[in-house]
Image 1: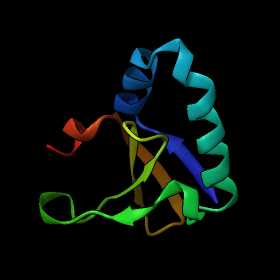
Image 2: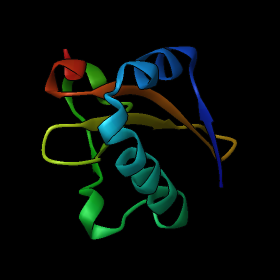
Image 3: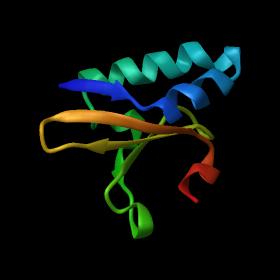
Length: 85
């Protein structure tokens, strides 16, 4: 599995507090190892975001991603629940 980061994701990642970056990196590594690991709470989104999936970094922080047809996973956005809007 190959994971890529969109420019949007990279910009938003820089805004994550330093205190949360290590936890975020650990969750990304866990995702790469097993995208459906139960602690990540990976789930498909609905509505306008029906082509995207999400997983939890912690109680507040989420990562939105998309599977592509060629097997690449693109991390699209990171933030609190407002990223779903």
